[in-house]
Amino acid sequence: MSLRIEIVIPARLASTRLPEKLLLRETGKSVLRHTFEAASQATIPQGITVAVDSQRVLQEVESFGGRAVMTDPALPSGTDRVAVIARELTHVDAFINVQGDEPEIPVEAIDGVARLLTKHPDADIATLATPIRQRDRLLDPACVKVVCDHAGRALYFSRSAIPHARLWDDQLLDQTPPHWLHHLGIYGYRRDLLLRMNEIPTSPLEQLEKLEQLRFLQAGCKIVVGTIAHAPKGIDTLEDYQAFVSRHRSKLVKSNGAECR
Image (cartoon, rainbow, N blue to C red; front, side):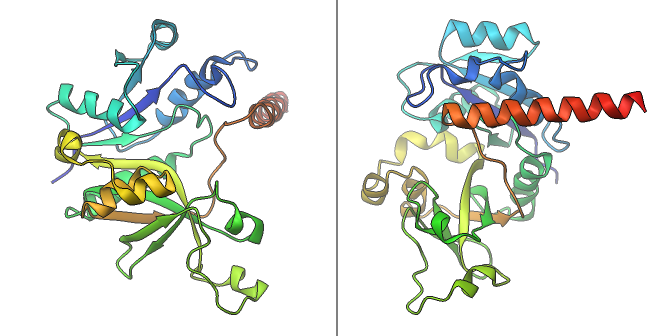
């Protein structure tokens, strides 16, 4: 039986490292609109809802014809905003959380999460990871690592370099299948899990690592992890945004050049 799946984009106006980044529009479109349009290319989900926390973001979504729902600005996380939508959309079976600052999110990432939820009916959550091939990424606490069992279920998420290589060799980074996986911030949730959010307390592991997914893992939830070869970086800093603008303009130039030939 096919699942009814909704994409939810939590869109919070405030951001620490790059203020109001979702509304930046040096390309002629806001970051949020780019993300919405990229997510709209997914073929498996049936709809998209933007969970906003301010009138300015609400007006932005409405300006490009998207569906927006106002959520409490005091909600602690994007997952809590997705849970608000889950309570409203009672006909939907599962929800895919796409971060609003992912304007280059690939179709295969969203559809991949949707397929995982369908293929693994016992999984509460589906998510993605990509191989780590550089040692500096492996050692970077901002690059969250995930270790899985043979069935692809998450055993642990950490900011540390796990698994730890007792004897280091640079060639370990080139192995297939990869020894290290970078966890990506896209999630698919069953509706019933989101409805039980208030029953799952913040966990000690979550507090230590500052990783929300550890709350669910420590509570015994099953998290299935798929892998994709590459994943574009989201926008966290001004440098990230400027790099995105540059890539976007290059694509436009190439596209216009192709049309002229």
